[in-house]
Image (cartoon, rainbow, N blue to C red; front, side):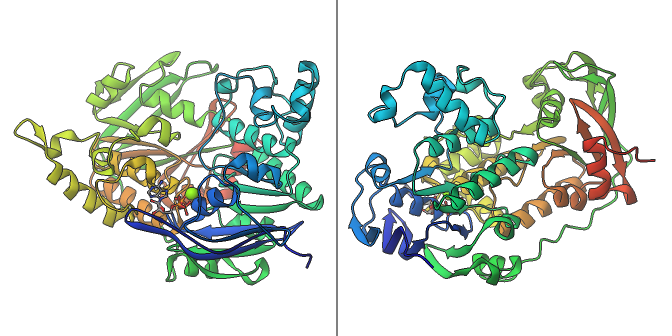
Length: 499
Ligand SMILES: Nc1ncnc2c1ncn2[C@@H]1O[C@H](COP(=O)(O)OP(=O)(O)OP(=O)(O)O)[C@@H](O)[C@H]1O
Ligand SMILES: [Mg+2]
């Protein structure tokens, strides 16, 4: 193997109450994809931030081409040829796509390029990440979160880096978009670039990685060629024990019709309206390709988007189309964009956990911090939330742990109808099983559940019934024996009439 471009030696990083990294070493070789794996809070993003000079390590060394370097900020790391796409989107929504792609290049040669030429360079990079149809002059904020993620990857491309660190680049992607990402990664490695790739979608390891490093609690558990890392080994090393993603045995739904939708046409779509009845205890999965209208459907069900047509009722009572009316009727939506739509990052974790359910922590007209702490402790144990304590600022939590907080917040509200958009995105494999169990439990208590997921095993494993979206419409419905990945894919693609 060629000499490493980037090397980390014995990195140590502590935050108040947590040792995020304790002696982590890592090698990045040219032309190879190094998968960095570990549970939520294991220290992956911290390592990325140190490698790019975003944060300073307490101890340890960084070497580029065998020589020690001390990047004080991302700009210096960029000068060594190291760039990162962070877990949090850093796209500036008010700026045109071109400026976002060119971000950080202002002071270099490219900054002097004429505007027209800049758009051209941006368009070229966008094409490479599968965004050939995006107008580089458009405001970045008008793009979907998935497209914004790809804009960040385009940014890494125009920087011509030798080492590219990708922190959960695929979390928001599916289908063609995911394929585009993978082919960009392969292209980069073919050009000799070293890639660090962080993901919770473990099937990507076999598809993409050359090397694997598993972190647990801020330490390297092991490191080696990807061929030696079948999924069960990765999981065992991540979690510290064997875990089967077993789906809970579904209990039979009751007879009571809790959630009734008639003739619904989501705003901005055409065609015939659709009907849906969800009974108490029933779990309905919504599948479909990216952009097939799943999230829009869910938002219409939650009153977050006024539908073009149709009515929704809960336990026989019509619900006006507004979020307030829906919540009052017991319909809650856990959105896909959990961080922006679901959390107050400045508040302590205990406050976020109880935000949607203030009554349970109110005492004598005040919010009781003690009850909040109690509520937090319960959710921490259920979902394996890792924070230094109930009073920690939510902003400081790892990405996946923030996701768990939002889920906990909604799961606590005991609604009648629970709508979930991609409930396990960004969540580690140990906690996924736990989330499935909680969903099944809530259903068994009489809730009606509708969830959107891009992970087919999740849909087939959890749902009593599956709706498949295509082109903004519900293209079909499957139940019982007919729920399998093949039937779902045919409906999603429109390739075959399923009898
Ligand atoms: N600025 C900070 N202040 C305090 N604690 C922090 C800070 N940044 C990270 N931590 C803590 O360091 C630990 C490692 O976090 P990190 O973000 O590196 O995890 P991760 O492996 O990327 O997890 P995920 O898969 O959830 O993204 C966590 O316990 C986190 O709460
Ligand atoms: Mg992270």
